[in-house]
Length: 204
Image (cartoon, rainbow, N blue to C red):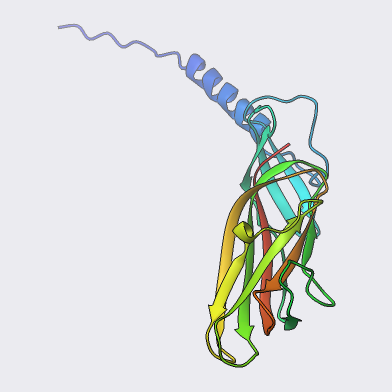
């Protein structure tokens, strides 16, 4: 019986590995400082870029080529602002800014589909009775709505409830999102531990 040994040429396999590695390197976010504008050249499906959305907030964006929102956010924290200062409203049955320091976030120069979270501890300060407090937000020229609001309905003085609302929204480039609140009638409600978050899903 004769056994023949044949040398296997694995140069093709090595070449394929090099091509795969080159493609992976091409898709990785570029080295250096993250950009503050979205790329418009050398685009291809799967391209990734590092984007500076705000001081200390960096996003990893993936190019998908979709018409309105061609970049998907695949990494990075939301835009976020908060206050633990209590603000009060009395007999304010339409949405207004809370006194002194309403929370606000201005988005970067891009359109986006995003999840907006509004949250607050809402406390009844007036005497007993069924009292309602809502906290919502405006988006640029678009007024605040009940449908986006976190709400609490308390029945006794000093009762408080933590309320959170998350809503999928679309924002225009550079839009300002600002906290708004109301009371359900002629009584006083307090708002504290306030939070506003904007977490993009897709941008363009």
